[in-house]
Amino acid sequence: MQATIEFLKLYWAPLLCGVAVVAILPLVAGYIVLVERKLMADMQARLGPMRVGPHGLLQPIADAVKLLIKEDIIPDNADKMVFWLAPVLSVGAALLSLAGLAIGPAFQIAQDINIGILFVVGISALGIFGIVLGGWASNSHYSLMGALRSSAQLVSYETAAGMALVSALLFTGTLNIKSIVEVQSKEGIWFVMLAPVAFFTYLVASIAETNRAPFDLPEAESELVAGYMTEFSGFRWSLYFLAEYTNMIVVASVATTLFLGGWLRPFASVRRLNFLDFIPTLLLVAVAAYCVMRTPKQPTRVQQLFMLAVAGLCFAVGLVLLAPVIVPLINPSLRVVVAPFYAGIHGGFWFILKVSLYIYFFMWLRFTIPRYRFDQLMRLGWHFLIPLSIINVLLVGVALIAGSYFNLHGWGLLLVTTPAAVITLVAALMILAAEKQRDAGHDPNAASDFYAG
Amino acid sequence: MLDKLLFYFFAALAVGSAVLMVTRRNVVHGAIFLITALLATAGIFLQLRAEFLFIVQIILYVGGIMVLFVFVIMLVNLDVALQQIQFARQKWVALLVALALAGQVGLMFWSSGKMPGQGLPMLTAAAASSLPPNSEEVAKSLFSSYLLPFEIASVLLLVAMIGAVVMAKKRT
Image 1: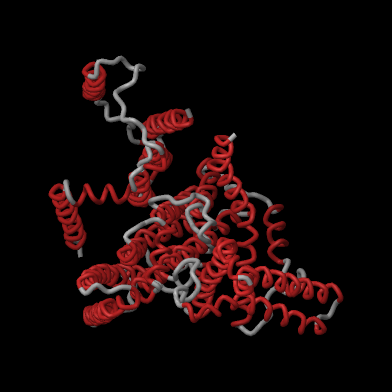
Image 2: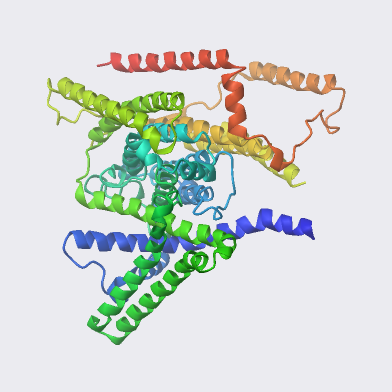
């Protein structure tokens, strides 16, 4: 009996969680797309999708149905097997890497793997094969060009991202995702403060790795139609799309875990700031109140009801989030009983909030900065980001040795890491100045790279 | 039982895809089967509970080297490659090497005093919970017992890297 339960726990629980994630993720990705379109509309002073459902809230479902019933075209000269395999590979790698992530202390599909962060990064990097092979298999120039650009871009920026991860991992001394967050909780400081340059490097490199604007050269529609996706249609195309958005979630989660304290509340170790625990509830109640306030202004009865339903849902979730905070205040003896609920629910809330902010930043950049040219992109990667991240690893190492010499911990480590960051920035400025001097001789806008355009 | 099943699955996958990799005419298909073979090898590492080797195999060989391979293959004109002879007609050399390899494996079985199927002297399997933390163990042995070989290898790689940069620069 005991053995059976152990067996179920070992093999079936992760399997069920995995199936749940795979089932829910397309919906999540669809709504990220909707949020992106709405944000874009907001920044361009228009309304965005408004037709399907109240404020276009059912648009992702309509889009999904449309994609499912669209004709699935395979070009005559395509390599059928590879064409079939490529999108599956892309989406499979992205989904598999989700298994290693920890959303809260208890929410992790592959529990406590020793190589944690390496697993996530390594597996998600396999998705590039889907892009490259898909581009090759379509037997079209645009696709091949997009695939080549994509692989060149990924190989270059993965180095910078890896170096950024190394400089954060120097603080933790472990690769296990849970332990990484626990170290941040013990030190009482997030690594974004200790290694700001590494965070910046990772931020830029992760945008390039997920092929997002301003680095979305592989699918630059003004030059390459749709890059590697040109020949794909219907469901296959949507698989690529799903992979792209899953990858966004993965890089955002990695950044959150390593730099932004994972599921920890801001200042989790400071007792006096415990009132911050009420923020999730307040936020949701505020959303609910806003929905109720806007209800009379909705034109149709259905939309009014919908707004009220959203308000009720937010209010209910807010109450659930409130319970683990309020109960120990009323009856302190229940603190131990409530602790796992607190860690699970609030941890999940903070993690998802941080991931959403990171993704929001991606979108914000996309609508603000114009696209780079390919040789500019390569130059930024090889001439600036990689040297910067290598210097940063060296200096963070030196700072850590100095920190252990003076026996510094937590916020005290800032005393040694801040000078290191400043020196790195000076080095960065020097690199830029050297670049400028070298380029002074010839026209900087002359596209010299083979892959440019 | 599950362990054995996994091992034979990954082993068969590795051998099968390696054979297919050599016999395919299309270079890209060959590359795909090479990737499969490397992934299957990584699976065997995982089945042996060497997590760190598993992920290093994937990051280095599949995610690094194979991406570059595929990148180069994309630049090659496949129609020309299809016209060329597939095998280099080195049958006899190949036979010699294969015989030598078979001899080595046979010698291993013979010297251990057991026939194939009886099993080789194996390490006793540790319980999953008491396994040493993989990456820490690798790091310790790499930076204490094997420090000199490690440093020599890094210098070699550095030399290769600088050499590649110098050769690429010469053209302009």
